[in-house]
Length: 218
Image (cartoon, rainbow, N blue to C red; front, side, top):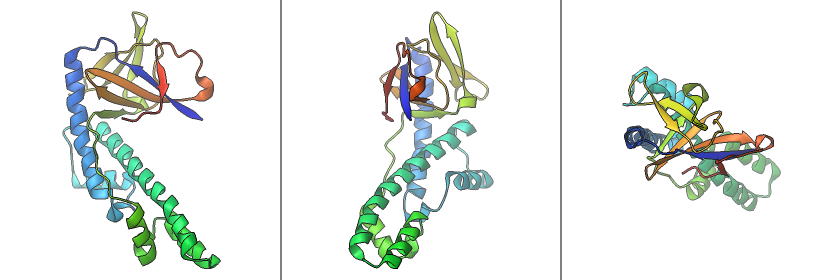
């Protein structure tokens, strides 16, 4: 089982925060486009990799580092998939009420599992009822892959260096803990501070230092 550990920036330079806030704002536009184009029946079959490859082929670019928009795309598509799966739970209940025929139930469950509901009039109607088209309201987050940042210790505190908007330049962020984050990071910018969210195995949680635990995504 994994939990989310949260570290926070410590006395972050306002200029650094402003630069990262601008990056998060631009990435918010990427999220909005993903939800707009692929957050409905028409986009349910598309994976984030297929969308990414299509955008690269079309030379569809964003005014942010390539890795940043790719990770944002992946994250947004995962959120969309979660809403689809939540709707499927209600759809399965509706199927059980709809028919007691075992073979028909199996056919409908299989079509639902593999996202083939758009081609079936009954499933399409049920999913439209329970899966409401969503919209992006997140413009304050940056997803940073594990190989895109570095960590170091300075003054008894951990620091992270994450990519900035300028190619080849990184932004150093001091944290309020000596524990260095690992894995993929979710940076959430709030009121001049940055929360650094990252997942850890429960067994690995011993001394949390100044970090806290949580599951908040935004």
